[in-house]
Image (cartoon, each protein chain N blue to C red):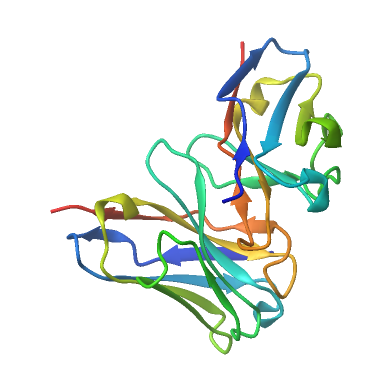
Length: 111
Length: 121
């Protein structure tokens, strides 16, 4: 089964930049779009990046997404960190047998 | 404004059944695929089941196949999840989520607030 692996947690100070990786277990991650969801404590997820690098309206341009085929991974970068960015982040893609595969999730802590 | 409101969660004994509902508003319900996604306490997101906009195609995670049934009533703008033979490991918050396409091909742009299902004796 296709899996997406993320680091368990990352932390950084306000104003700094963090990057979260999402590594595919097989195949080419570049073959299917990757999305990123933010989930603040006690709330439902919201989309921060769709189709690898697109931002929904209302999401600040501090959030960006990219694909690195050489490492078979996607990345979410948050620049100019704010305390409000403290949340869990999940990548999501799909494969031929499963329409939605979520990553393991990363807790972002703003120190 | 898009709204998704789940209901039907609660405490159920192992082996029991429960039916979840998701009332949708603010968009043309029949034009979009819908899914159920769950999150066990302190754990990550797990996709459970999806249904196409017409209701003609359904999809299930292996963990629930044969026990859960997804359906929709486009005349009532409502999504359902019938859960049978419930197990302790089905304990989770269940979210209703809207797809951006009429088939489950992409991603979710709206989520409900979730309903808690607890399976325990």
